[in-house]
Length: 474
Image (tube, helix red, strand yellow):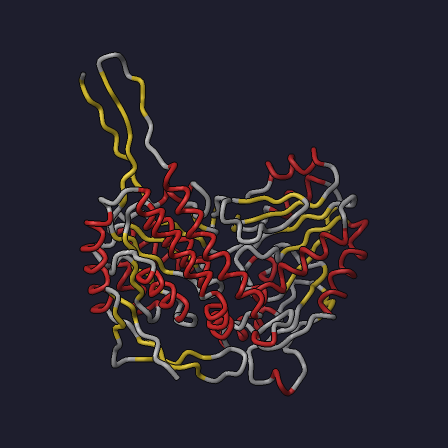
């Protein structure tokens, strides 16, 4: 089994300290991973800083061409990348293939977007010429989560390097391999050696060193609210800007006039995709009392017919990412907050699944909106439901958490849909749909404990640049 090493300045950088990369489907090791130290982080940042000084002088056209070439190589190696992603995360192979395709889309999107990214002129009078330019920060650090490693790598790095920055990426310790593979492809595509660097390791050691490094001028983080708070504090101590995409407890609000079959499929798909390990999963189902039984029956039936197995078998549901995450999800089943277990609630039967970190699709009816299971992010294939009588109560329930990442409204009354979209406290709201196939073009980020700043879309270019205003006396 091959060693996964940090990738710095176009070279593998091994270390004497390693840890095993565990396959969540079998509990067996996929190989060892280098445990990057502060020395490796320092080397990566220095390499990135040296490269960025030349990169910032390239034209948007040159960057566009190189990012497009990089996207082409991701497409070329998509099947290999998908297999690595499926093994590391446990997700079904078809979902990993979709992730590879979306990773390439991010590179292409920002390749095209940078050509149209300009400053503005400001009229101040006939004798003054005032204008703005957008300038990169320099070296940006990206600490990415384990649930969508390829997508998260690409969406952060593509926007960062398109705007003239260099990147140092710390992938999640559970899922390091595709980050290293994507960085290799950047060099093959012709991007400067040292522009994109990856330091593997744990958050406590490697991530902390990257966050604290004095030459890292900007940080982006995707992960838990608790860790995001630690990173925000460390960044604030150095007065470094951050983009934090944190947890979610997103609501799907279903009115009596909704297309129940479509709503049920979206609810089930959100819970099953990536085993529910998605910060934007619609894990709180808020349904009108008159259609509650019908909708829950549809969701429960979809859950009961779900096929479960290793990602390589490409079934509906793979394992959770680790035994640690499995134990966390199981812990929520100890207190259902007054709810009734409709289906699921534990590990699936089957000798062939015993060694993996599998958890059944789970639906819980009638939970207390203030209970832990309704308030905290579970990050597993678990949906809690509660009922409402009128629009005002639906809004109150939907907004009854400290999170604010996504929301959805299901209704045939589009006036109501617009009202609800305005009332929901969330960074994105979907009406009669949920998610957007990666949503590359859609600004994404949260309110409250879901974080701040925006990634994806054109708006992400603002996140990775700072405005300079120039005023010239004529």
